[in-house]
Image 1 (cartoon, helix red, strand yellow):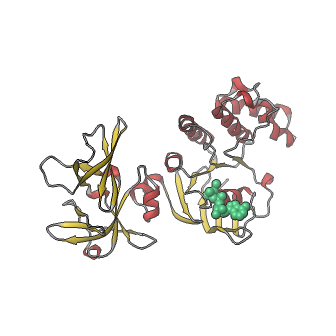
Image 2: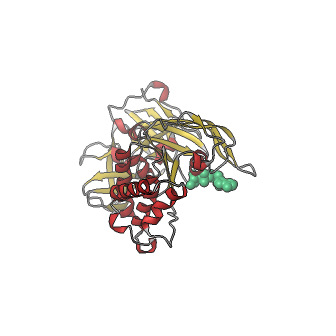
Image 3: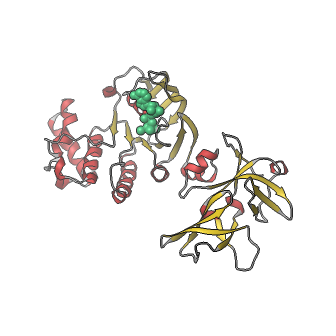
Length: 365
Ligand SMILES: Nc1ncnc2c1ncn2[C@@H]1O[C@H](COP(=O)(O)OP(=O)(O)O)[C@@H](O)[C@H]1O
Ligand SMILES: [Mg+2]
């Protein structure tokens, strides 16, 4: 069973940079786990410690039933796919796929069988005689995936494998990697800075910031119940709106921002009394805001600054005293620049956070 267990794994680079603070993570056999976070948060370092490409400063890494801290990368039965495909330019695709297996002195027929299987899985049978320079970026990345598949590893490790591809190819390869996981049932650990990739691929997502794990959860759990403000702002696009201020009761419940905006809270939003009259950050996603009916009372009205019409949806940027407040409407919305727009917050979309740096989520009940 190729589970992967990290216990108190940490990394300090020479010179004292703490790239990863002690991290615990239990990845089940066959699970697809994504490490996500902004550039420099320690994702690659964590992956490279699992691969054995980076020495571990503290803690243990186990693959299957064995602690591998002292095991060479080549003996860990892992396969890694990077952003840079690093194919051998003078070899054709078949030779590129065969190379690692030949180095391991695998029998000829077994090599052919594995390469043919991988080529079929990836739909690159017709490319086997081509040199890498005659391939598109997406085809090259497929060959790089193929090189991992033929190894039949216990664990696949991906480090931003799609970053070099154009947007359309990225979406296509993302779906192929998801299919591959479904088909092979192998343990996969995938690193990306792209929250959409994380949300669409991961069965579980590990959100990291500054070398510290912020939350480990299934995608929708992260979206619905972010543990803190960082996760709330990182997951979801366009990002959650945040307002700093406090809740107070005056002609109904209102959120008064530090800059002087006054937002009427929806009638069905009923926070506990201890959440009133204290510094709080309120978060609400653009999709949890509705256009107010004409003439009716609204939660908030502010001038329109930007209208982004995407056809299937419209993003409207409202200019509050506190800053930009993004609202997302399905379909097409008739919003005019500089004209005020009245909207209502949806009660079940409202999240409250501590106003301090950590910004922990506050249970609203
Ligand atoms: N070889 C290295 N020597 C010193 N510092 C490094 C080295 N590699 C990475 N770092 C630092 O460790 C931190 C985490 O890096 P990395 O794991 O590459 O982040 P990510 O993959 O999330 O972008 C960063 O601050 C980075 O500058
Ligand atoms: Mg990286």
